[in-house]
Amino acid sequence: MNDFGHVLWFTGLSGAGKTTTAERVKARLLESGRRVELLDGDELRGTICKGLGFTREDRLENVKRIVYVAGLLSKHGVDVLVSAITPYREMREYARRTLPGYVEIYVECPLEECERRDVKGLYAKARRGEVRHFTGISDPYEIPHRPDVTIGTLTGTLDENAETVLAHIGIRAGAARA
Ligand code: ADP
Image (cartoon, rainbow, N blue to C red):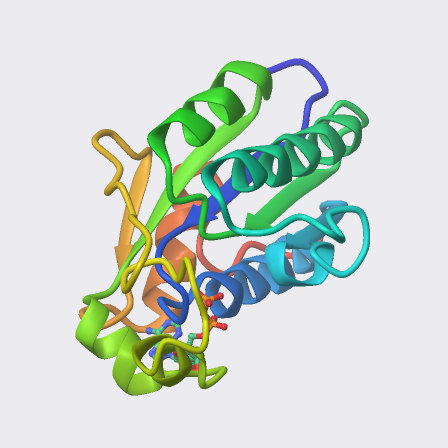
């Protein structure tokens, strides 16, 4: 794939384990000598995606901006990890069409478990009606039909899942620093 970096796009419900898994994969890629950047959807909403809400249109615009930055980085050989819910198939198809190194990773976790974890306390707020357009509660999540990789965070450990992702891009378990 020429000199393009991989774009490892983690999609799934809030609290499914996208960022946790992406951070582990990032650490392993750095160990193997790759140049890596992690684009966290929550963080970007405070910077280049500031002001965007959670309607379908705003979510699409949000993804377009992330795709743009991911494209700039990956064309210079940087591996990009994206952690963002990306709930609509249309958005994921846009990312796939646009990014040469796109790898869709479905981070699977039942809603009940995400809600039990409630990492940021947002599910409780969404249930109380204090947060609108909350994915899984009051906004849709369209399950990927054909992700490149599926990892389950209730069924698999963090280590196992990170290795599954790395194996998909040809990085062996415990590969030595380049
Ligand atoms: P997301 O980025 O999808 O919103 P986070 O990674 O922020 O989710 O949070 C996931 C939570 O689930 C963390 O508190 C993490 O410790 C926990 N967790 C439990 N088991 C796993 C697993 N196998 N993989 C990833 N996260 C897990």
